[in-house]
Amino acid sequence: MRPKQHETRGSGDLFRARLDQIINMRHELAQLAGKIDWDFINGEITPLYSDSGRPGIATRGRHLVLRPSR
Image 1 (cartoon, rainbow, N blue to C red):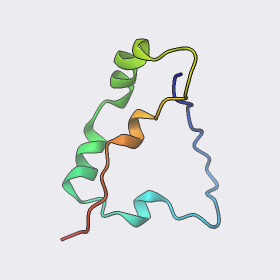
Image 2: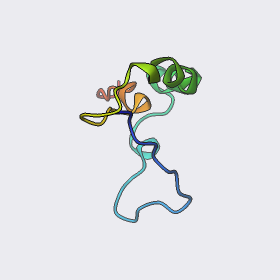
Image 3: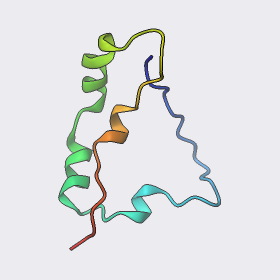
Image 4: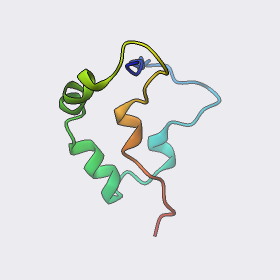
């Protein structure tokens, strides 16, 4: 199954910190993630998903591995 598209809302969740508040946005991986054309990647891999079965994982969520900052 294709991954569900997450809605971005202007009002954040009161009890959850946003990811950009947790990680160092000046880190090389965070900067690289901002330069990747995620819509193109999603368009290329969409035909590979099945219409049934377990839901897929969002492509955008896979790119960042959190590591201790230096």
